[in-house]
Every structure is written in C-alpha cells, then in structure tokens.
Amino acid sequence: MKNFLQDKNSLTYAEKVHRFQHLNELNTRAKLKMLHATLNFEPSEKLSNTQLADITDRYMQGLQMQDHPYLVYRHQDAKHPHVHIVASLIRSDGTRVNTHLMAPRLSEPTRKAIEQEFSLQPSQQKQRIRIPPIEAVQKIVPGDNIPVTQAMDRILGAVNRHYHFANLHEYNAILRAYNVTAETGSPGSKTHLHKGIYYTALDDHGNKISPPVMASQLTSRPTLSRLNEKFHQPAVNYMDNLSSIRQRIDWALDQQPETLRELLTHLQADAIEIVTPPRNGRNPHDYVYVDHRTRTAVTGNILGPAYTTSAVTAGLTQHHRTPQHKQSQQQPDSSKFNSNTPQLLSALLHTDPGGPGPDPYQQDLGHAPRRKR
Image (tube, rainbow, N blue to C red; front, side, top):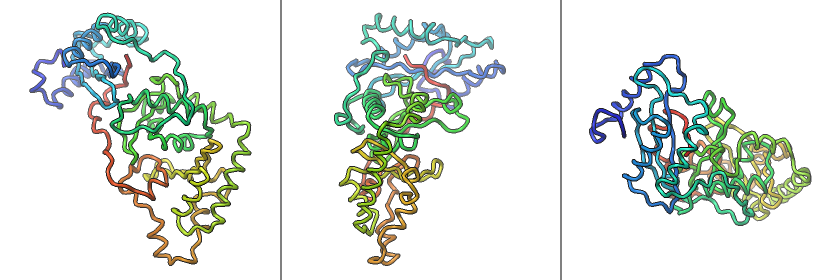
C-alpha cells in the first residue's frame, strides 16, 4: 500500500474503496478509471515482501504513477509468486493518466529494466513453447508444484493441436478431463464485448482453484479468434471419426445396459467419455462424447437424433428395473460438484469426498483489467 493517509494495518476495505471513489468522482468523463496490473515471477525466485514492495514501487515509477495511491497484494494461488496492483487512474486534479499504448510505451520497458536492476529471470512469455504429445500431458492437480500458467500452456497447446472440436462446448468437454475450463465472460463484460477468452484451473469437482488467465497471457495463444478458425476447419477424416463414434455407441447400447453407469463402462472400454453440461442451466447443450481414440469431441445432436441425451437415456433397458429403482441407480449425486462447469459423467457417477472449494480471492478483481508484466 502506498500514498494512503492511514497506516495499512488500520485501513479498512471500505476506506480503501472510498479513497479510490473520491478520486474517480473528480473525472466524470473517463470510462476507464482503475488500473489492475500483475507482476509475475518465476517459482525459483524467493522474494521477500520488502523486495516485492520495492519492485512494485519501481514499476509504478515506470508507469509514471508513483504519486497515485495504490494497493499491492501478494498472491500464491497460481503456483508462482506474483503481486496484484490496484490503483486509480485519476489524478488529484481530476485529469486522467494516458493509458494509450501504455504496455509498449511504459510497462514493457519498465519490466525489462526491473529484471536487470533486481537480477530477476527474464520473462519467457514471448518464447515459443514446445507442444508436447498428448500422451505426455497431465491434468492440473491442486497443490502441484508446476505453475498453473505453465501447465495450462502444455494442456491447451496439446489439445488444440491433437484434438478436433467444432464449438466451445466440445472444447470445454476435452479440457474438463485436464481440469481446465474456458470462458468468454458474461454478457456485458469487457471480455465478452471484446471477444476475448480466459482459462481457469479446476479441481476434480469443477471448483476454480486459480484466477482467470487471459489467452493473450499464454504462449500457446489459444485466443477466441484462433479457436473460431479451428471450429470452421474440420479434420479431413472428420466424417470417418463420427462414423466410428456412432458404431461404438451402438455397440454399447446393444449390450442392453440398464443404467448410465453400465453404459459409461462400455463406452470407456472403447475410449469414449461422456461430458454433461453445467447444471446451472446457463449454457445448455447435449451430452458431449469425447473419443480419445480418434481425438474428437462431438455433441450428441451432431451425431444424430439417436445419440442425443434424451434418446440415449430413453433407450436404456428398463424391463429389469422398477421406475423407482432405476431412478435411484441413474441419478448422479452432484452435490459436491460445481454447477457452473461441465462435468465428466464418470466423475458424477463415481463421486468421492473431498476437494477444495473455490478460490476465495475475488474481492478486488473487479476494479479494472489486469496488465501483465
């Protein structure tokens, strides 16, 4: 915390907000009034709070905002040390800081200078990453030592290269197996208005365990514009892949499974996983079949009327079960799972206890967009 009248230990959250609001009210014309930046460091860099404060002060000096009141939060949720900076862009005389091309004009030169002055490892953001084979990619696990952004880069690079998908639902169905989800923001949000996309790490229950990471912050560059190109460029053997998926679903149904669990067991033996839509009803879609043999994700309604959620459910054998018994066997217990994310049907049908809850760090994220070091 810098340039506040009170001591940081006695300053309440309401007083912090009031200080920013007072400055913002001095300029009624500006639309963007807050700066939210992050400074990110390599996991091997063991920096003290004093060092992080000095680096932050140097960064704000580089942005020519050293006299503005700003808050600094140290955060470790992404498995690498980083700080969040929140500041008002409105000066005490009511004028606004010029943010036009601030990143190349001020932020990037300051970042390079800080790396030299504080003997930090150079940023690797612009380097091209080596995309691993899909077999070498592991899902994100809470508490793992691998930085979240690094794990995401490997997962997204491999999935985008090796899997075929035709829409965001199918894309998320694949990512769910790796504990990642992609979101384009709620209607009216800056991300949605600017056609952006961000990624968040999940635990096995679909709860978020990291802050959102914008596609532009990842070296694999899984932006929405690139995804849209992939959506409209089906693989050469796409129709053959769909035919193979239909045949294997038909075979599984021919075994006359009596429950979803039995059907899923047959499909998993043939390398097919089923992913259900979020249960909050905001992004409804049919079951998504993820075929790890042909590396294709496809919704049931694309495969045909016989493969939709309702058709498959209705086709399950009923003559050995009473309706009450069948309902109790088939209804998955999803009480431990996040209703905002797609879920692997295998996880819903084989629930296990535990799993951390959502990341509690949300209080100041809404002040303004981030700017990465």
